Image (cartoon, rainbow, N blue to C red; front, side):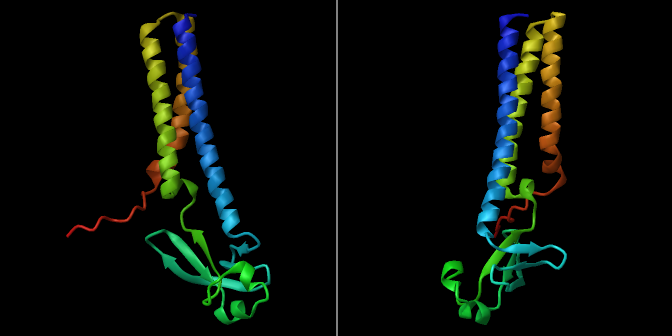
Length: 175
């Protein structure tokens, strides 16, 4: 196997690993930020409400279509009388918790990271194709083909949600 093919394989494999690591890290950071914003609160998905650490229910208050969020709010008079209000909220209208309407890959940040990961996969595919065009020995083509198939699988996995859902970006104001 030629040295150029080995370097192409290593670089393409590195790009694939970085793309998948970027996707995992971005999703992990998103989940961690969600947990931080709702620390101590528990969500009841069957009845669609949150419960604060003191037992108060936060019911759906409003849907924010622009930011694709569901806003939940506790009753103001209960929060204002709560002994831990100072640690929980400074609002006199009750504590608010938000829940994204869209899962991770469909948020704007998710789509941004997904597109970067897809560009890395596309670059890996390009490197493999160019190396295969330059080197025609069976062992070279077989090794490059393996990485090519791996890149196609990774690209298909990353692309599936991108095509299935709209971007949910606000419409431009044209006057």
